[in-house]
Length: 136
Length: 131
Image (cartoon, rainbow over all chains, first blue to last red):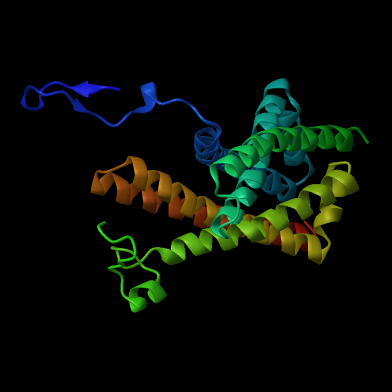
């Protein structure tokens, strides 16, 4: 534990901070929820751009499609879908928390791993469904 | 606390549900309510579009010509915009402590959310009415 030697010559304990704090899954899910929440702003802008291009006509829609269909566009879309999926599933976990369910250390850790895995799989599923739909 | 059963909050204070600032409970409740609506609407739109269309221009305009689809997509856009504004506001309040910067960023976030919501609704309406 970090100590502060200045206080009256006697070493005083300081609260542990990020550098020496052991990572645990509930901490990771909380940080990821905020990070994906901010990242989802990009998803929202993409959604609006998609709808705008559709409203603007066939030409605009085609250029939007070629932009998102490019390798970089696909990479961004893949990341955004995982972000949205994780935020959605962890959001459901938070709704249960708000009802007072699943707050024990053991259950919160298990559901934490659960939403990380289901969130990632859900993003992959959406991406694959998108590729399949575009290929129809 | 010496006595774990002692509670300094009055019943009226608990019923109002407010903390020291005297407001903010509605922020939490709105964020949850928007999240529920958003989750359901997103799931509907995602699976309806990904399983029922080929994402082409023709298929998508046809999808938006359904009043049900257009309504749900418009609600998703509106809920997203408000959920975004409330969520980003919390992030700003956590990390930005200078009052003027905080106010400008929060104001900007809310303006952006309003633009996003309006833009989404009007463009969806344009497609629905046959653009």
